[in-house]
Amino acid sequence: MKIISILILFSLFPLSTFAVNETNQSFSKAKKLLETKVYQNNRITLYCGALFDAKKNIIPPQGFHTDKHVKRSKRVEWEHVVPAENFGRTFIEWREGDKQCVTSKGKTYKGRKCANKVNAEYKYMQADMHNLFPAIGAVNAMRSNYNFQMLPHVQSYFGSCPMKIDNKKAEPPSEARGRIARTYLYMDDTYSRYSMSKSQKQLMNAWDKMYPVSEWECTRSKKIAKIQKNKNAIVESRCNAR
Image (cartoon, rainbow, N blue to C red):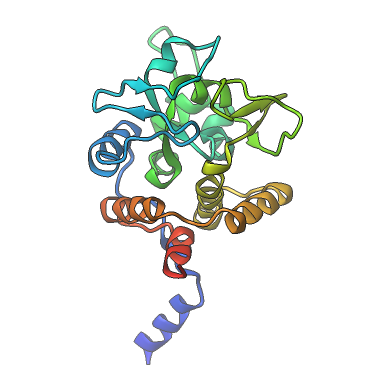
């Protein structure tokens, strides 16, 4: 009876409550695994559809242009679709620092660097591969930690790549919106520390419905789940329903 009671208790909680990244705390290792184990046969960036090679060099699409972060435009970077700051600020080490966060010269610091130094939970969230996508470095830099929103009267900043950024908001190309939405929904569903605003959740639910999963999105999710030992239940449910 005791075992049955325990099983019933666990069944009352959604599976996602327990489906967090608990295998890798290293952001660097996560990027390496994505490069060598997930994207090795599909080296295409999220926002602009740019190709990149095994040495992280970007092959920009015809007509791509940027006046800022030109050097970074030549390299692929791994973008937190849900910005690290969005969940990082829930950690006291990010907001206020910690007694361990002191430089060799005695200067205290806080933010991402401090959270990454002392808080294991933060490191697991930062290294969650379900939330990491390849992006042209310049696009990653310009997107910063801005929330997504429709910007109908804004022109693309990157020439032929229809990524719009204005007034600390970003509108991604339509080809990326479904993957972005299901990543936001995954982070919101999986990590109790992260919670979307009402308006952001409405937008992500709309994009999830408007832009169905592709074969590659399903493959990517399965590959990451095999490596990281936790699933993106949002993507998996959409793939199973195809």
